[in-house]
Image (tube, rainbow, N blue to C red):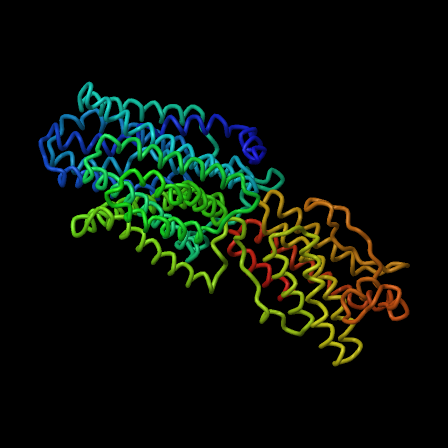
Length: 590
């Protein structure tokens, strides 16, 4: 098992302390559900239905407040939001033990709206602290931290309720939440990626909601809701099955084993060399949940039956958070994480009633079947939608190119080359190879129209190669790195079009995405690579493009480079889903 990825993530500044704070701050939050349920049922002498209604009120309020608090963070910063929510938490939990049931019901909605969004803040901060290529491991650690919190919070709440009182337990939760808010205020973890220090502060284009609130983002939120729906239904199914078997004393042990399976699965997922698509994870989680109900009276088999589905809990949750961090630009990530958190909350609110309805009309086994079947249905819908878009893969967030894009004209060959480079999650060297690979189609078509057109096609293909070699890097990098890379790309194209005594064309080096030193390659070699059927550079040397011909097309390529330079600055500040389209437009207009 590879441990180095986790060591590297924890070695990043601020990550280790954030993980410890997140673990401690989430424990009182995970204890709220069982505490409110027991308080309503025992202290207020209401039924379990009334207790569930209070829990639903908290859920609705939290779902409403998630995006609002996230947008507050995006606009005003973390600390102002923490002041508001921490004060509200302190007020609610101070008076909650004394409220009547109707007042508690209303107060639960308000408290949910202004609840301390520890989950969303931690995930947003991880996106700011951890580079993109290491976020899968970071969110795997985060999901394991969530599991530990859920394994500790509810048992502690039950212990306090049984040994002390509901009033003391509720005050303890409120005090812990206030301490968590103060700790977050003092540490003030970053929630946005650092801006480019070389650029003026007012040059960044504002991020509009429609730029990131796309069908793909909504699909990720739907997958997140399906995940927690299956988990909530499984939780209730375990309790119902053991209660029917007369083994209530084993509920804690089975739930703990389920949590351990999730911890192991999250650890293995983060150590993998390649991410698993989110749609595959939610499909597997739903599929493996279906047969758990077949255990029947053989309750001891639950420890085995829960293993496959339990191992997929943490990976599925971490994959959805990872995707949100990649799909949404940093200035809007607070609101996006709020929507993601609300999606998780909605799934929890749906899963328990759905499983409960199936159990009431059948048996405990039907609870597992109900949530598993609905989860598979959502997976099927996502698979259908996936055909017309990019797969829900945490490592691939850019639009793919189809064969229909390879239109046989010089200008559109450059567009196709750029598409290929942007769509390929590889190194600039591979992106350059892809650009050269699509050039022969346009050159062959242009040759039939005449020598001048063929020469222009070769030159355009060279420009496309240089642009595409850097476009992929620009699309995958933050603005602080992407804009300089785009400018170097334009300079490289301009230099490629400048005639010299021994004409050469500058191609991007494959040594590093940040490399600024172009590798000189004879124009004859580029022509050999671009023209179909060329055996070697030496074979085409007699017909290589002369310096005069390159000089003739130099103005056009220079204009293209200028246009791409101007547009790439916008590309570098856009969300990943929009960069491919902008890059296409830049080359097409050039």
